[in-house]
Length: 103
Image (cartoon, rainbow, N blue to C red; front, side):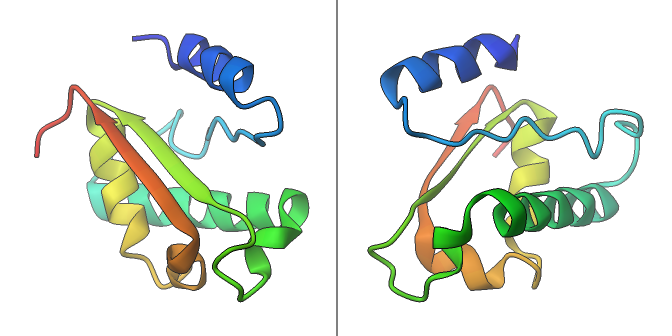
């Protein structure tokens, strides 16, 4: 499944969206979920800090955060969402889409 195609469709539907295609686990995709989730959480946090300041606003009406995961990527996203690093952004969580993943 090519997530780049899904990314392109998302940007067509939501042209003001800012999209991160994470790379923190690309070279280490055979690891355990815990460290992979932590790497993703840190990558998302750094992306938000540098590209999406509005997600740092405590008002839950300002900014939204959504995740799309495919296969094992969905499990990594679920693990990342439990990280204390992403806890400040959970009120902004709008959607989590899991494609072809174990539940």
